[in-house]
Amino acid sequence: MQSPHPWKVKLLRVAWAAVEMTLFRGSFHTMSRWRSFLLRCFGAHVGRGCKIRRTVRIYYPWNLTLGELCIIGDDVRLYNLGQITIGDRVMISQEAYLCAGTHDYTDPSLPLLTPPITIGADVWICARAFVGPGLAVGEGAVVAACGVAVKDVPPWTIVGGNPAKFVKQRAWRDQTTTLGPGQK
Amino acid sequence: MQSPHPWKVKLLRVAWAAVEMTLFRGSFHTMSRWRSFLLRCFGAHVGRGCKIRRTVRIYYPWNLTLGELCIIGDDVRLYNLGQITIGDRVMISQEAYLCAGTHDYTDPSLPLLTPPITIGADVWICARAFVGPGLAVGEGAVVAACGVAVKDVPPWTIVGGNPAKFVKQRAWRDQTTTLGPGQK
Amino acid sequence: MQSPHPWKVKLLRVAWAAVEMTLFRGSFHTMSRWRSFLLRCFGAHVGRGCKIRRTVRIYYPWNLTLGELCIIGDDVRLYNLGQITIGDRVMISQEAYLCAGTHDYTDPSLPLLTPPITIGADVWICARAFVGPGLAVGEGAVVAACGVAVKDVPPWTIVGGNPAKFVKQRAWRDQTTTLGPGQK
Image (cartoon, rainbow over all chains, first blue to last red; front, side, top):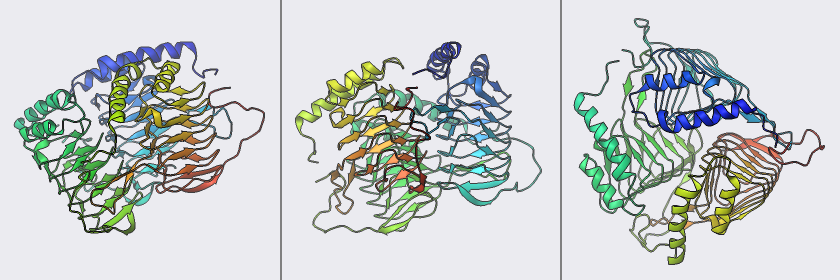
C-alpha cells in the first residue's frame, strides 16, 4: 500500500495521537480552554468560548475550523480526513459523527476520498446524528437525534430519520437575544 | 453561562464521576451487586437481581429507578438528566441510548430540557436502539436493534427503523414461566 | 440462571478478555500482524495481510473467520456469539456492528440465540452500519454508513437507511486491478 499521507503528516498524526491520549483526554471536564489551546497548537482554528469535551475525537486538528461559542459534546467524532468547517454558536451533541472521509467503491483498491464538510452558524447536530462526506448543513438547521444526513441540509430546516428527511422549519421564538448555546 | 445545576448537584456529579471511573468501571464483569450498591449510594433505586455491566454510563444515579431482574448491557448510555424509570425484567442491550435530555431549539441560548423517560415491565430495548426524551415505552414492547423511538411505543408492540415504526405485535409463546431475562 | 456457556468457554472468555485489554488494545496502531497472531492463538482464522485496528472489539475469537487483505476499522464491534465469517478483501469501517446474537423474545426468559453472519468477498460495511443476526451480505455489496441491514443483502448491491433498502447496483469502474482495499 502506498499511503496517501506523506511523511510529515504521519509524524504529526503520531504526535497528535500522543497528545490526545494524555494531555487532551486526561484533562478535567471543565478545561475547555486548555483543550482549545492544544488543538490550536496542532493547527486548528478554534474560536473563543468553545466548550470541547475531553472525550471528543478529532483526527486531524489541522483540518478543523471552529467558530465562536460552539459546544462539542462527549464522544463526538470529528473524522476530519478532509476539512471540517463549523460556524459560530454550533452545538454538536454526544456521539454525533461528522465523517469527512470515504472511499471510491468503484475501484477495488478503495482509494480514500476526503470531501469537506461545512456546518453553518447556529446549527444543532443532535445526539448520535451523522453527517456524511461532502455535505453542507445550512445555517440554523437541526439534524435530529440519530438523523443520518446523506445530502445537504437547507438552512433553518429540521431533518431527521435515516436517511434524514425534512421534518419542519425552524425559527427562533423571539429575537430578544443574540446569545449562543449555554450563554444565557 | 448560568448553570442550570445548583452547587450541591455539581459536587455530587464530581463525586459520582470519580466513583464511576474507578470503583464502578474498574469492577469485575460479574460484580453486578457491587455496582447496584454503588448506584444506591448515589440515590438510585435498583431492584434486586439486576445485572448492570461495568461499561454502562449513568449520568445522575439519583435520577434512576430500576425494577427487579433487569439487564443493562455493555456501553448502554442512560443519559438521565431527567428521571429514567425502568420496570421489572427489562433488558437493555449493548449501546442502547436512553436520552432524557434535550434543548429548546427555538431559543438561541438552547436552554436544557429534561423530560423523563418511562420504560414498562418486560420491555426489550435492543442493541444500539435510541429512546428520545419524554417518551413512554409500554409494557412488553420491543424497540428493535438500532430503532429510534421518537414517539411513545404502545405496549406489546415491536417497533423498528429510524424513525421507529410498528413492525408487529409481541406475545409470549406460552405462559408456563414467570421468569425474567436470563432466569431460566 | 443456567448459563448457556460451559465451563471451558468461560475460562477462555476470561483469558481472551485479559489479553484483549492488554496485549491487543495496548498494541501500537500499526501492529496488525501482532493482533492477527493474538486472534489466531484464540482460535480465529485470520487470512494474511489483514489490518485490524487496536480498538476493534471481538467477543469470541474462536467464532471468527476472516479472509485475506481485510480491513477492520476503529471501534468495530464483532459481536460473534455465533460464527462470523468474512470473505477476502472486505472492509469494515469505524463503529460498524456485526451482531451475531439475539434473544427469543417470545419466551419470558429471553433465551440466547446465536445465528451466524456471513459476509462475502469484496464487501464494504461502511461506518456505523449494522448487520443483524443470521444475515448474509453477498459478494461485492455495500452497506452504506449507518445502514441497518435486517435482511440478506444481495451481491453487488448498495443498501442504506434504517431499515436498509436497495439504493443502487455496484460495479467496478474497470477490471485492470485485482488488488484489495488499500493495496494500490
